[in-house]
Amino acid sequence: MSLRRLPNLLTSALFVLLLAAPLCAQSGVRPRPTPKPDEDEEAESVYTEEVRIPVFAFDEKGNFDAALSSDDVLVVEDDVPQQVKSVRRTPASVVLLLGTDWDLDPIVRANTTRDVALSVIRNLREGDSLAVVQYNGKVDTLQGWTGDKLEAVRAVRTKLASGEGSNMSRGIRRAVEMLSERPVGNRHLVIITDGIDTANSRDYDDATRRLVASQTTLHVISYNEVAREAMKQPWWKTPPEKPGAAQTAADQATVGIDPTRPPGMRGPGINPHDVNSGVTFDPALRRRRKEAEHEMERGQARLKTLTEETGGRLRQPDSEEGMSVEAAAAAREIDSQYVITYSPKRPLRRAAPTEFRRIHVGARRQGLTLRARTGYVVGTMRQPEGKK
Image (tube, rainbow, N blue to C red; front, side, top):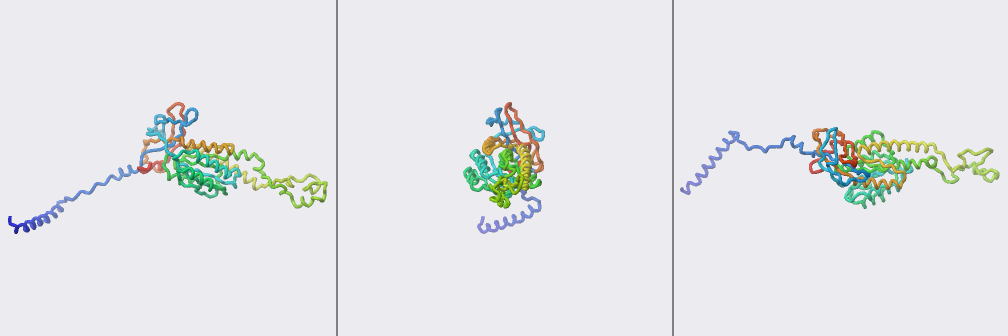
């Protein structure tokens, strides 16, 4: 072939390709788009289908059962038996909520509350996470989340202080907000309180609803019995004043005038009980403390119901020393908890996030006792993949 004809051949080939392109377009031949995954299938894969329930396990002597297995546990959800997948122990996330309302209840002392809180901290396992919140009329975070127990101890020792008022509901809400940052399954709230809550019923109902929905186990170490013992003392009703404080000017005027009469005797007969007695009878104070007694009783009844619903326990020792002992026991119980898991037979993705499902956790082994919460909120269990 002549070299002169080569450029002509290349030009002809290019011309043929240009003619072929419109013909391909007219024939309807186009590149196929990349198929998109079905939207329903994508939505179904967003959340894990696993329910995690904290369970306390005890042997026939009431001690922690260290040999719990999935075959030992019966779970019934809304009257339907479930298949337990696993039984495991995981680090706990614990918020200490400390009430310091000294003005409403003189038994609540910062030093006592501090000692009880330190007893909880010292008896938790290494690896647990802690946060500390104080409440009175306001709420203060003394320590954010930390795995360092010494850091939490320093915060309690240096930052805890008495205050006025007792808005426990606001404190619970703050604790729930903090616990929502932690994995579901082993969340705990420990409240050291006398049960008094100055919030209105609407705020209390909102706080407790949030607490139940957060899958948090509530433990309460109560001043109630300590206060009950103190109420038997005279100073609870009529606190003594400084000597001579009740002596009036008239009493002082009689001194030295009539040596046959002691100070305070202004005339014949016996002086009234409020003259030079050393005790002031303050009706407003008595009324206020009577109201405090009533609020303590009301608060303890509500907290007892709430601890039972969340699988925790209300502890009411009758001495300040007993409160520290019970605090240590509560910490050991927190670290004796298992987390059981199962895939619900009714899928979570098909339920409303606010749906509450009742559960019953029972023991299949003789001598074994299990304690757990009474249900869960669906939305709490909907955890994104990889964030269990």
